[in-house]
Length: 125
Image: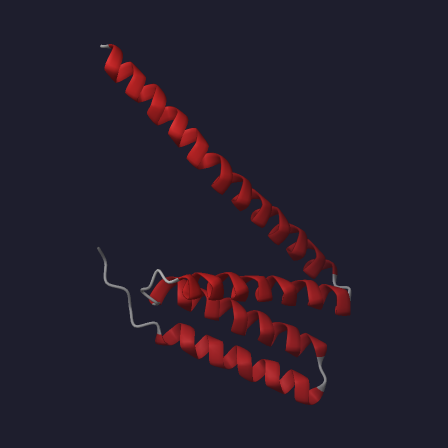
């Protein structure tokens, strides 16, 4: 198994995103708020997923929360700015999420049927 780097680079992106978020709030600039929120939430989720070695429910919950916050920031940016590209990104994200849920639901069922079929064929011989 390959050793992962320390993850300091993701921490830098989280801090930069948070600083962008704060500067957007101070300047009352919606685009800066949107970009900062997406960076901060997205890179925090990526850091938790990649570098925090834990199987606690809290870690999993935080990963999901930060992913949903990232999605929420994209939707918020689309609603506030009305940008076509943000609308396309929103539709793409919704499609990916729906696809992931459908595959995560169906894949174990398909694998279990394949295992049962393989086991039955193995026992008949």
